[in-house]
Amino acid sequence: MREALEVLVNSVQVTRVEKRIKAPLKFAYDWCTDYREDDHEITGSIRRKVILEKTAKKAVYIYLWDDETGKQQMSANIVSLKPPSSWHLDSFGKEQTYTGDYKLIRINKDETRLVIVSVDVFYAVDETQPGNKNLKKSESR
Image 1 (cartoon, rainbow, N blue to C red):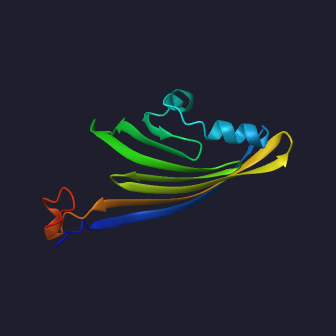
Image 2 (cartoon, rainbow, N blue to C red):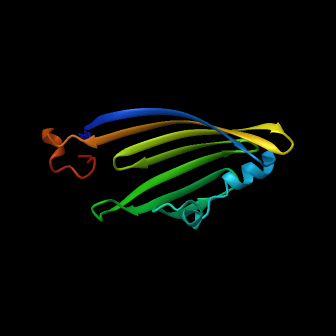
């Protein structure tokens, strides 16, 4: 028998963002998909990236950070690269999942438009459910 972890979905947010980039499409794609462990230095993020795998078709990494209480948090991230102009990101964390589709569109030889469509799902474990009180992971019996 398998016990399932019950969660409460607090909210779902769908976002569409467009940004004009003053760079040719190939340069923009290479820069946007050049996943590096020192990216937080460029973005100012508190999350530290640890690259687990990086190939021409895929990037797998984890983010590590401390939350407001000082407890370490983590998310696992899988990027499917689709050269020359798109990629897809799936991110899984303790209280959030994120799915993003990224598309670059050539405006002219020196400009590119980035279009991002994303879905964020925020959730929490429902500790009021009897099976969740001491459940650390799904167990097979």
